Image (tube, rainbow, N blue to C red):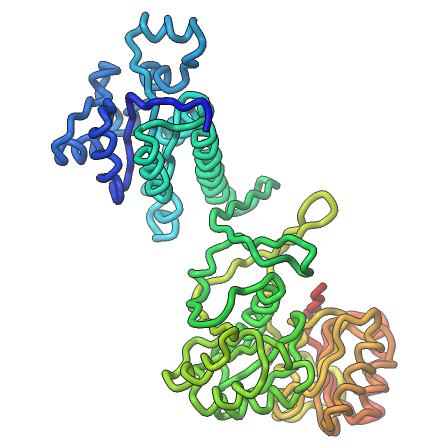
Length: 510
């Protein structure tokens, strides 16, 4: 370490006092003069430790209901002075400004107040002015001052002043300055996003303070990171750490199963962000077995997700399959015992939280942001375009297929029969290719497509798709419609007794 600096004074002004006591006692033990304000000052006094009120330094009381306490030249001069600058040192003496070596400040809980549903006035009062200014000043002057801007850093700071006997190095101070600017930038982003909820200003700001380094990215030669609070989303019960690819698949699984949240027991198996098996049945075991039948080859190493509790019987079935991740709202005790039999198998309990309503991805030298596709095709959206109308059973299969189609890479075609995914064509450069891929896949797993339903994520520009589907046994079709040549497809369906409905909503997923 170099440029060690002995701390002689500290300004402490925090909203939350949790974890502060051992720091205050250590500073007092080391002979550090402590300055403070309001509730923090009382907290320190109650510990029997001497503390100098900031009002005694500034000769001003806390005013405007506490809105102004520390905003004063004698406070900021004590923080921002350059100790190797003769002019600064002379001015400190001239204006009787105390040197401040340590600044410990946290901010009013703005985000928590917004999340609580508080009134706008309460939210506005949680926009910190003095605290954010102290943090920025102390972090700017890291050459001479160490800034502790979050209670999450108390343990590290206490360790530094304990092991180094009250001294801090330039490396310590610069590291804490980075932490401080992370706090301040995140805070300002949260405030901006609150004021810009209607997005009248075309500016995009996102800040995630919870980050973790992944084993690698999409491939071993790529670095990978995840920024977000995974604990808000899941309880991880067992298994190795989630990888970059695991996280992409888990995201796809959660979004797909969101379509079936309130449905009968439904199970899905995903691979490379696409469903390779989905089924809705009377029991979750039956749903799993029939989902697996959709493509038992692709299911190897897949991501499994259920919309209801996984019981022991289902767990026994799952246990014979090599899978990376299992997700459910809950597990029976017996199911957990079985599933934990594979040490690397990741078991997640999905919590009932609201997911973001926007999607974000890097693009060129910027980012693309859009509203998430939150539209689920329902019976009320359907228009009946052909003379032959779908039966009640076919309608159920059509809507089931549409839900899966929405979450499958474009271009896509999805086949379903009796609320079971029979096959899909995924990510093809033409819809005809997607359709032919789906037919071949269904045949390879011995699915009888006679009477099956077909869903398309976008319209058919020509009647070739409905003709190919009809010859494969498809009897009902759901698609958005909207092609200038829709009538050609309608005419073919009318001539061949195929029922076709339009939804009016395209579901591209790239």
